[in-house]
Image (cartoon, rainbow, N blue to C red; front, side):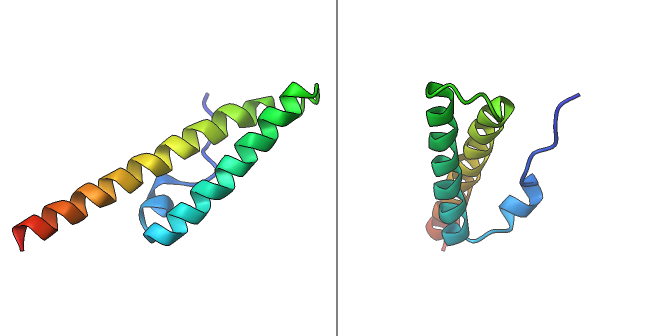
Length: 77
């Protein structure tokens, strides 16, 4: 059974664009640190690499959805 995501999709959707950008930056830093740990032979949190990558993808998807929705409402006004 798949592990639960650290951030629920509903919670991510309710965040402002600034909060999403901050969360994305935080996750990218974590992803970098995890990759660095793997390269140096520290094998802690190997599953977290995959989880971080997926959370980054979720946030980027929601950011693009927000941009698309904003463009759609702007063109209809």
